[in-house]
Amino acid sequence: MKAEIIAVGSEMLTPDRIDTNSLFLTEELNKLGIEVVRKSIVGDNRDYLSAAFHEALERVELIIASGGLGPTEDDLTRETVADLLGRKLVLNNAILQYIEGRFRQLGREMPAVNVRQAMVPEGAEVLENPRGSAPGLWLEARGRRIALLPGPPRELKPMFHEQVLPRLERLGSGIRMFHRELRVAGMGESAVEQRIKPIYTRYADVNTTILAAPGEIQIHLRLWTGDAAHAQKTLDDITQSFQLALADRIFSQDGSSMEEVVAHILSMNNATISAAESCTGGLLAQRLTTIAGSSSYFLGGVVCYSNELKTAWADVPPELILSKGAVSSEVAIALAHGIRRSTGSTLGVGITGIAGPGGGSEEKPVGTVHVAISHAAGVKERGTRFPGDRETIRWHASQLALDMVRIHFLYNGGEPPARTSARS
Image (cartoon, rainbow, N blue to C red; front, side, top):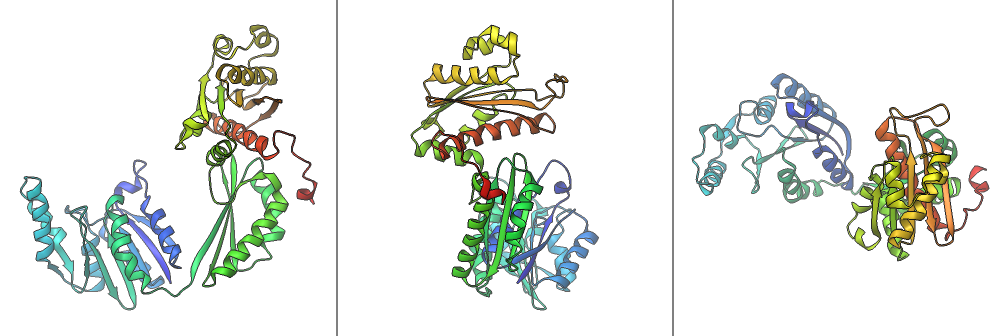
């Protein structure tokens, strides 16, 4: 079965609102083996809405719409679909009584405009909404099925799970989507493609998508089948081949973020970490502490932009800054050593760089970054130059720092072995 999702509301055509419902609905439909082939956002205009529903009815067996079920004049979904299907709107007294009861509970009288929410197309099944005043609707016509759901996610999600999902499960064909998401660090999109294309092109039934994201490349594998064992074996085979081609560059096989992976590694090794950050402005600490339970591994950090605070807070010698410059491998190493000593952490991370847009020079252009990791056996340092604007450079720098921590534990604190097999 194929489906389309229509998000209704002019507010989602502005920069102020984001349609998150379609992401949730796509994931849930894919689990059922229903493929979403198109998504659209339509403003509060009856002609545009009618065209969107009419075209969807020509293409797919299932349409799920969100929004446009409120009481005001610009809530047009009910009327538009009823008119398109040639059905009258009739007053549903049970819905009206429910809405009146909600207002009584709030000690208010129901405005007359809310009666619109109790108007139901003939033949429609009402999807109750105990979390709001707008009921959903389920309609069937000409071999097509339409679910009209409220826009607020806190109302849409439980309505889908409780009332739409059971209806769709009865229609299931047994085919569903199996998905695997791998994430790669330290390589560009074209380099990843070059290494793995000879592998994934051997699997005609697997859809492979390579996406570039800040600081990483995502590889999505999707397989539609009713044979779960076949799907798992196929995805395992591809993943193992990708591991040979990309080696330690794959940091996640289940879609986990870099900070989630590093948090898990630190926890499993009973290790702690601290950070002295300059150009990243605390971004590394922020990413590490977004994970629940981060107090078990993150001891603390400092944002030391000025040279004086690099000395005061991370014990960087002033003469080192004077001779080598604040943005240098030597200062990054001193930051890492200093913060590790002052906090007593297993690892200390030092980051310094030029995030821009100003401050660069011919010798050290914008995007120059140095990251160091201090540990009991010594130190590792990486110097590089990242492209992009200020926020992109800061994100890349924090991603590099996290990846260096990951690699440190991957090789037990030693240097990574040569990856000659990955290049062959």
